[in-house]
Amino acid sequence: MIKKLSCLLALLILISSLSACSNQKQETQTTKAVPKVITTPISSTSGTSTGDSKTDANNKSPDLNGSQLLTKQIPAPSLMNNIIGEPTNQEIDIYLPASYFTENKYYPVFYFLPGFGDTSSYYGTVFKDEMDNLLKNSKVKDMIIVSVNGQNKLTGSFYVNSPVTGNWEDFVVKDVVSYVDSNYRTIKKSSARGISGHSMGGFGTINIAMRHPEVFSCAYALSPGLFDKSGLSESDIIINESYLDMIKASESSGEFIGDFTNAYGAAFSPNANGKIPYINYPYKLIKNKLIKDTTVLKAWENGFGGLEGKVIKYKSNLKKLHALTIEYGTNDEYTWIPKGCEYFSSLLKSQKIKHTLVSFDGDHQGHVVERIREQVLPFFSNNLSFN
Image 1 (cartoon, rainbow, N blue to C red):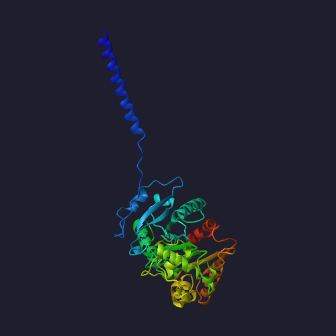
Image 2: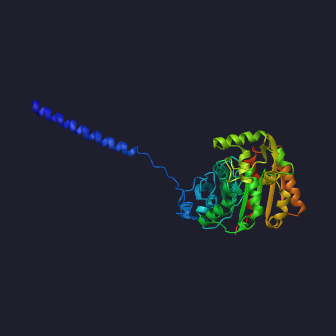
Image 3: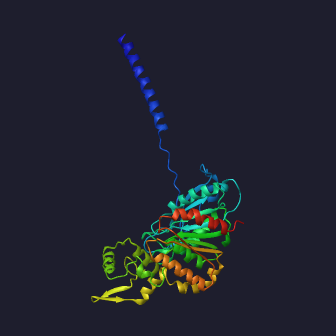
């Protein structure tokens, strides 16, 4: 009897053990983590995608508004050979309207350049929210919008070519535009492309538009970094003897000083053969005497400035633009920006270059989203070609 009970007990234990294993297996299966979907960076040695983004965009389910915001790592061969280790894959954010998923048509595109320290992802979200609402109320036409990264290891690239930070102008004009045209249903002509940006990106907007009317036909610059003849001395860029101590500290430590002055210098007065921070500075201390280099100082002035010469040099290009708007806030805390915008407008007028100068009651940063909603998006909806 005891033997039978022992066998029965062993059998019950075995059944219980098998049931527990089965339950544990089921629990493991149901709680297994869902793998993250990662966009693999595209090799910088190729100018085209290894996948088909057209298919990717069409296969992605649009959100409740019917539109889609895509974040892409794209090849940036223009940034190769920079000396600060800037990656040759860069992020852009692409807004596709709801109709992109339901209609087989082609779209105009406008490209947005964020300001110093701002991210493309932030503006990507802004454009999606604002476009969805405006389209819902039939206030603008369907467009593709691309928000372009302009941040680098020094916080801002100024969207210009530099042997130190890389060729950011070429990145925008060549790498980004060719990627978008190759992978999405865009109208591939300048009349269907526009460019806009804020602050540092506003400067980039004007600089790129006047140099590349064969790529962009319309431009809207929000509070752009522009100097009048005294703009450099009134700006936050530090041009004095005390800054030399910061440069020496950076050279000895081998670390960058993360400020606007160094980023500006690396963009407009680079010294790829020197030491960190790789800039030519307008002053040197020689035998305890401060020596000014007028040639170098001119390079610093001509970054955001030198506008008279630029307007004359690019006069024919500026006249090719279908629409150009420059705007600033009358209460901008960077007081040199309104002065620079007014000065630039006066130079355009003197050369009979068609443009619009707009001022609004606001500061530098606080009204950007409002201005995008009320001015920028309608501007491109009205001025870009849709066929």
